[in-house]
Image (cartoon, rainbow, N blue to C red; front, top):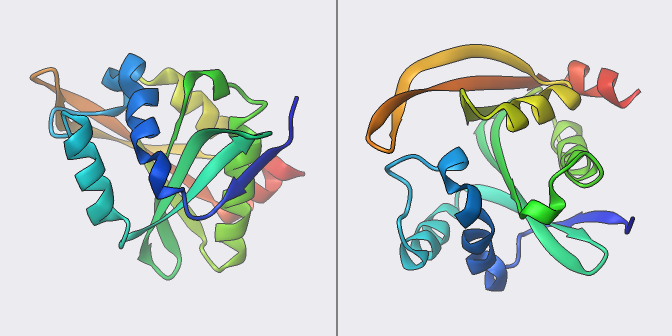
Length: 166
């Protein structure tokens, strides 16, 4: 297995790759209000880049993941991540998230908050493996394929993250 490394910011030339990565599982990560075309996606990315910090995830020379955080307050950030399918699994996703989250916690953040569709069991399982806990169900939070769906709030406290590392 090649070394997993993260680098900020995610390279702008590779933004269209994210769109390609998610096409086979888009229903797991995007609601009805998400960009519907590559052009919309790139435009949306361009407006968000001023509010978020991003990291690219490499395995050897292969770029295959993106992690983003947005500051909510001096102690709280929200985070999301996307990986191409060949990067799925604990060998890549966990070390990448640990590298980024270690940096975020070292900068003074005390909690990282994420949201997932209630039926995205793989993402919820990944969150548990790094120490995050389900904090609540956001009932009928958004729409997917024209139907109201629940989302789960996932919280990762600094102390729980550090326990998982040891």
